[in-house]
Length: 307
Image (cartoon, one colour):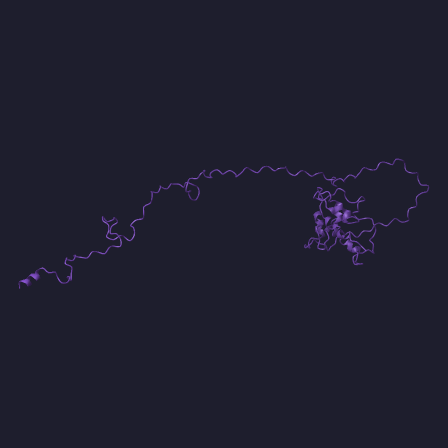
């Protein structure tokens, strides 16, 4: 009996207790807040670290106070002071000295004066002085008188009627006819739809009638040259291609056109050569293109060879 009582007083329990031995807390702790409960950190660290730092990392050094005015007139300040002062207010000097003066003066004057003075107002002097008088008196008169004069005078030269062609007008401008050309000398070198110059078709208006303008005995002017001043462009040059060159101005102060100063080359004067040959016609055209055909455009057709 005594052994059984001693075993019951000091033995451990056979299984753990259903509840902790200590008394439970009066209330459970609160769940952690999403944000700190105070703007100031707690005196002790929290049990678990925060999800993110509370503040941004501090700058390496305090920033300098900004200046009241920009340090440069440029839109943005430079990272460092410029090596040279700003471009304003003065303008930078030119990258190099100005160009040196031209190596030569202006073009020299013409090589020589014009061949002869202009025809107006006075006529040019003759090419050479008159011949010296004969060394001896003339021969004695003939033994017999000269032949009697002919019974009738020689017939006067015949020229085509001097009139304007009423069908002529400036190319592509029907209202500009011979009456229009008569107003200005420069209009006499207008070209018509038919290829004729006004001085050819408008003989009365442009004063190029053959009967009223006899060809000079000594030929064309020896002083006229082209307005370019090139001495080889004279009346002989005009005659080489009169169809176009008769409308060229001269170098004289009035700018006289070639058809005035070179009337022989341009067929704007009349020779006392009688009537046309009724049997003449252009080579290879039989009778289709005769002297009447030439007369319609003398400036370009008088050089036409015949049969």
